[in-house]
Image (cartoon, rainbow, N blue to C red; front, top):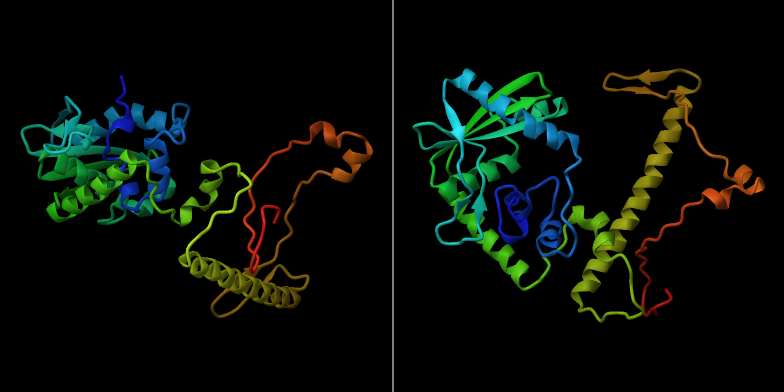
Length: 298
């Protein structure tokens, strides 16, 4: 039976807690851990399913490649001082103080594993595992696109682990007292999931929000200016290309190709009284800013 991930912080959580995950923010993880939102269901995710099924193959490949024998890790490991800090380990390296983490990834991620590179999320995960289990060295074995195999090794970083514990304790306190971490940039599309509806009240906010709102307006102004510049330059380049395929300079190659696009004739659907039949309504929330006082109908 799978452990209830809401009750502890594990190795796959630590990168998000530290704000160093490309896939999940501290706020999104907090929403899952507190039950504010349901945890992402990966049961039908084919990549996850295949990764699980290929784990044994990759572990055996690691042994053939390195000569190091591995065995199944027998348990969930728990931090000696904090029983809500845990980790699971894919394999232990036999007769050593080392562990193995197995990964599978797509061919598009090959550059992330080039040379001595290891994706930062996995550095943080393995270091967490080493700290929790009290081991000195971690290995990563990765199957890339089903065609390339890489092994990496890393030593336990005590200074980094201390920082991980510090940040995990702060995050755990946020879970216990239901205080949400501050949103980050990747949370912008996620905010509608966290707060899908509104009431009719307007909150009073402190002067710090004046600065943030001002920054938002200034940023939007510069975006509009940059869009005008983009449109101007693109129009001038297209004018030079004319009816040619494109142009080339000493530094660049630019093409302007025809591209097929399909669309639905909504006016025709309306004329045939079919538009409303197949229309799908949805709701969202739109952020608008006005200078000065506003009311609930703004």
